[in-house]
Image 1 (cartoon, rainbow, N blue to C red):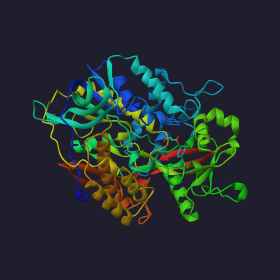
Image 2: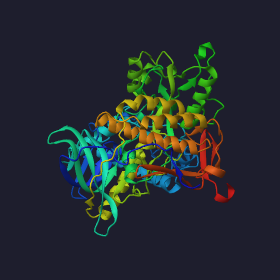
Image 3: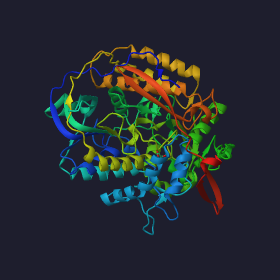
Image 4: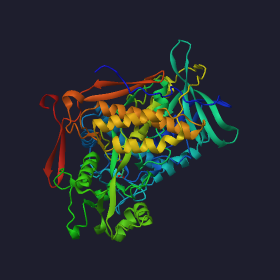
Length: 582
Ligand code: SIN
């Protein structure tokens, strides 16, 4: 398929911003302070002269802090990286990069052990073993967790403590990455020369400034705020992806947005970050129902998939949506009453407190749940060492598309991806640190959109580019986005920069979703209900040059020719089928 020009809409090739009022230098700038960013910083320090971490809010404000379920790795007795690989590939619906998945599952156990050595307190059994649970799509108990359901908060705590004990790592909080600065080295090669930041209230560094550097590592998280309801915190406005796209890097697999099946339903008007009910609750025995079982409510996941309520996330989200459409109800329910008060208080204290704060007691009541945006499986395309196709730019964690998630991320592989690929970046970057590049003039362009477009944008994306998609809806979304692109910003500020980033990423996502005429993983087309390997095994890559976006299809063989066999005693055996047998 030739490159397809995306819908004609005016999107800035750089954000309008005042000239830098201050400057600084660092060898490597890391954008983001979750597990990916802080791991990269801790491992790069002492390997390069100066590491600077910049983060849009405070260090703990990103998605890592909110992760509940845990971090997956083959750490349990009898488990193997090969089995973790098979589960990852099956969840990814043929769109994973096999080599990247192998890196993830093989290096995962050691990376988690290092996180423990750093001081992360994971939960243990009474026998002193690491306590491992199960989530959707896993055939083994392999999810390490902390504080019951506060895994991300504990990892974030341990990482921040390590950063605070490393005074050679400089940190600037309340710093939005505006755009990359590009430049040429002495050989004439173009690449990253720095980035512009907007900093609020950090002493002398206030307002827009320029950081000159030799490499940038994007670890800035996802894009959940593109949708009306999401599990992501308010900082997840797709900034890193938009910055990379504008600078010439490739975004891949943007259409594969994961909708978490069990997000607490707070009513039709609720907006922004919503409470997650971890898949681990189902891992411990909770199940989905379409009404009170005592009054005839049915466990509708039974018969849908061999893993029933613990099927991969896309399968569960689709089954919930299907049942919502059939019944006309705005949500389904999770029944976890049988877990009992003691278990709830010990294993899921955060979720219990949150549900109760919203007037639902999971010990005695069903929890209303509906799918909401949870995770961007796509992002800035990278190789196995986090390198993007722009020299000097690296990406890791949710902002990146390393190839491990394919069309649907396996539960609890996200923290692991950030950990493993940040270690890899730190392994190669010091030796390949580019020469300083002279940064070209920072060209200002027009086209900043008003911060006031946010709600309309989110509504268009949720209603037409959400869990269910079809050609007319995607075309309507495109029309709305075109209209919003013409709504100019009244002022140059964080609200309009974020809105422009949201619009840039929404447009790319909607364009890719319209072109992928099949159903695969978390991309569900009502008008093309089947997966179609004959036409759509491969990836959509989005690029921008001079403010014009194009989408290109890059074919690659499906990577899930696998079998998962019942081996008796409730155990499963997994094997990779030979290419010839597929
Ligand atoms: C969950 O706890 O259900 C979310 C875990 C994940 O997103 O991997």
